[in-house]
Length: 130
View (cartoon, rainbow, N blue to C red):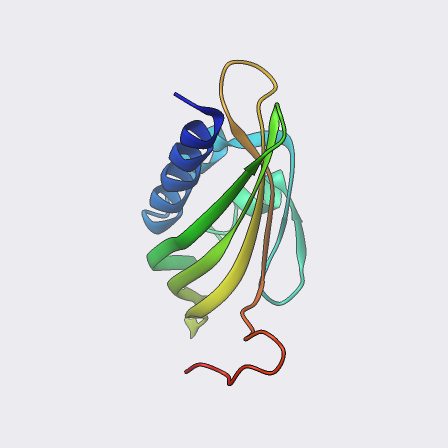
């Protein structure tokens, strides 16, 4: 298995765990010093990221599309699009977003050290997509 295969597997496992609202599985995929940035710019520690489900986050669909993986030895950066059907405390937060993931391999397996979810925009000069 190449490092990009291992990172691709991590991304798939993380997206599946998020889609199932499985905080226990998500917890096993995050580095101890994980930090996540949500689509509205909020920053969450590992502990706060894991309590989102108990506090009102419900994912109905959660997919990382077209992940592009760049390996750097025991670290990798993944850039893709996140398509989610999600609600937070009853309000709809569904949409498509740009997602950047930082994966690290401190031992024998890949873990997520950072997730950054932000707006998905067309390149400069390109028409905006629907």
